[in-house]
Structure formats: C-alpha cells, structure tokens
Image 1 (spheres, rainbow over the protein chains, first blue to last red):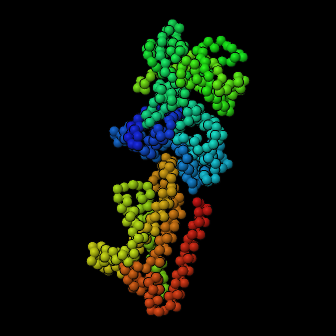
Image 2: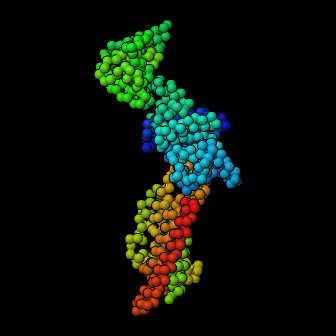
Image 3: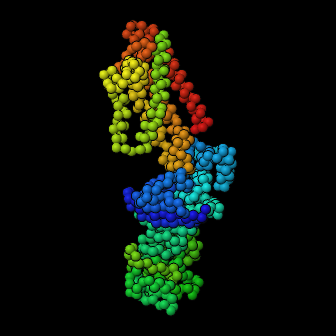
Length: 370
Length: 222
C-alpha cells in the first residue's frame, strides 16, 4: 500500500497521445476531456488492455509497462480493478458470482463470504442472486464496483462509471463513492467528460484534449485559473476576453487591466509585461449583480454596465448574458439565483450593472504556446 | 428396414460433431476476434461447401484423399487400407462439408460476447483458459449448440459428397440416405418409405431432446 502510479505515454493512431500523469495512494485523479480526447485509451493503457507505442507505466517500484525495454505486464499481473462505462458484467452470472469470479482460487466458502461482504459494502446485500439483466443501471454499477474491489486492486480505474445512469441515481452514487473512498487506500483514476463530476469527486484534475494532458492540479485551480485560453474553453469559462496590461502596482498588490473603455483592477499578476495584450477570464460566479434596491460598497469594484441580451431560467439558477457598454460585440455571462432575477425584474433588453470581482479575474497568455 | 445404414448415418453424424466441436471453436474464435491478412480468403473457403454442388466438393475430396494423392498414399502406408470408400474417408469429407454449418453459428455466438466482458474477465485476474471455460463457453453455448445440431442434421441428410467419397458399401459407407435412394432405384418404395419415416422420427427425436435438455440447463444457468 502507499505506492504511486506514474504514467507517461506516447502513442500514434488513431490520433496522437501524449500523456503524463501521476496518482498517489488514496487520491482520486480525474482525467477530464471531451469525448474523443483519448481518455479511455489512457485508462486501457494503465489496465494493460492496450499497448501504446512509447512510454512507461510504473506502480511504486514495479514497472508495468516500458516500451523501451519491452516490459509489458498482463492485466492479470497488474492486479487492477476496473469499472467499465457499460460495467461489462458477466451476463450469465448472478451479482455474487460476478464478484466471486474476481476472487481468484480461494476456497469456495471464503470467496462466497468475501463477495457477500463486498456487496454489502456497495449496499447491494439483498440482491446477491439476481442476474445483471434484472438489476437497474445503478445496481449494475455497484456490482461492477464490488467486482473491481474484489482483488484488493493496486489501482482502481473508473471509466465514465456514472454516464449510464439517470441523474437522481448518479447523485446517490456520487455520495456512495465519497463514502466508500475513505476506505480506499489505492490510487483511483476516474475518467469523465463531466467537469462538475470531476470537481465533486476528485482531489486533482487532469485536463486531456486531443490526446494531450494540458493542465493538472486541484479542481478549483484548474477550473478558475486555466493555464491557456484553450483550457479556459474546455473548463467552460465563457467569460474569456482579450485585454491589455496597463500597469502593475506592486505596493498595493494589484494590476490594472484595460478592457474596451474600462480599466479593471485585478490581484497582482506580475508575470505579464505592462502594455502586453493578454487573455483574461472570470468565472460566471464572480460577476455580481448590482441591486437598485440595496446598493453596497462592493459596487465600486470594477463596475460594468450593459443590456441583457439573453435570459435563460434553469431551475434555481438563471443564466444571463449582457452586451457590455463600450465593448462591442462581446457578451459577459453571469448566473443569478432565479428568485433574485425575479425580484430585480431582470429581463431581455433591460439595463443592468454588475461588478467583476477583482480576485476572480485571471490573466492568461494570449497564445496557447506559453 | 436397413438398420446398419441408419446406425452408420448416426455414427457418422456423431463423430462429425465430435471432431468439429474443437475445430469449430478454434476457427470461429479466430474469425470472430482476430484480423489477419488471409482472413477474407479463409472466410470465402469456409462458405464454399454451401455454394458448390456436393458432387463437385465430393469429387475434389475423392481426388485429394484417393490412392493417387500423397494423403491417400500416406494413409494406406500407415493403416494398410484405402482412405476413400472407407468410414474414415467419409468422416473427413463430412467434417469438410460441415465446416460452414459449424463455424458460422459459432462465430456469430463468439462475436456477440462484448469485448469488454472478456477484458473485464482478464482484469478480474482470470487466466485465458479460465476466461474460456467460465465466461466465453457459457455465453457462446447456445450458438455452439445450434452449430452442433445443424451439423448433425446436415450429415444425416448429405447425399452427394457421401456417394462420391464413400461409394455405396453396405455396413462401411452406405448411409441411410443412400440406402433410401438405392431402394427407390430398385422400385422398393415400401422399404424406402419405412426408412424415410424412421429417419424422420429418429432425427426429430434426437434434435428435440438436445434442444429441450440444453434449454433447461439454460434456465438453471443461462
């Protein structure tokens, strides 16, 4: 226990793969990327189901794969646990027999007892003798998790394990995984295209795009401080604009940013030359509505005004897009609680003003090759 | 009633199934999951017995297995008798012309096993052998069974190839189908009718028992 998984892969067709990642014991690493980014291929490489052209995969001191020295341990030897996207349960075996298959050559009674224990762990105690086809999607997923854990795996691999269940079940499975993970002491690699899911479950995110790992870090950092405009787009930061660094004020620990006719204050971000053109982003949640009925001191912080051009209520939250005065053709996006939107009579074509929180503004080099 | 011919037919059918079971499984797994350069050719060759008139296939087999061929000469040197016009030759011919009936359903059965299920088995630590016995075989079993039933039925019913390779030696190569034809040629319609009826009942019973027995196994352990 306590060993770390290190992965370094390069591969060719169908599209190039260039991946570096590591996952410590007890850590959940989410490998996030749009479909077709190569996430599943990376997972299959770790599992030993696919051989990349180049690279090395190690678990602690043990080399699992080394293209240069022709080392390739079989999936059986790697002793991993994997949950496939469609679970890949053995359709002819009951839930408990599915788990028992993964328990090796131990005596029957011992395997039976351990499998029952694992099914209890995933809250499936009463359904041990049911065939996979008679189980719901969520229940099948639990069987797959129990089966993956049966080998006491060195590494647990989860390939989009929540994509085949409905939303309510998914929420319940999230909670269960969060509970379960306290008992897991191995590295866990979760592949998903859902950023929110990754942020909820993972300790670290690794963004994968076109087969390349772009940025790795704690979920919050990656999601609000993307390293490149491309990552900003991938993590769904819609408020991505071009601006110009006007001045750094080291003493006051702040940087001034020119955007259209506005001068915005941001936290001090000294890596950008004064006068240089940059990209900047701000999360939707860091755009704050000014309320005519309750003015506050915060309104002095980067005030911006404009006309609402889009107003989309989505349950509790309402998405609002603003055409900002003085910055033609650009839209600023924000989320407002729906009741706040109602109380303030927000609607299309209404004029509003908002604040861009200085701490939320993040500067990024203009091009992707930084 | 020509019992020896009926027994010979049944014996030939059973042996053909026994020989084709492992051959069919090996071939169909390769065709289902692997891709190799000569795959297209192999697939075409496998279907040939369905397309060619049985007499053509029988003719080639007769030439290949006959005393003039290396195979025939080798067999004669080792066993001291000719391969054609013997039960062994008949069995070899029967295996060849039944290949598509065995391989096509088996291949279909193995193809329907999702690749992830086999991968999951490997990731569960099951050896290739164990994956075959515990996962693949139970899942492919219905297809394998229909392959065997088809083989059985087709062997009982085959006429042209048997006549070309085996001839018409009572007790050695005269199958029931040939015996019936023989009786009709001799204007002995009563005997032909009796044999036809017996053949019908025997095969129907055999296949019926196989199906119902395995489907009840299927209910216990599908």
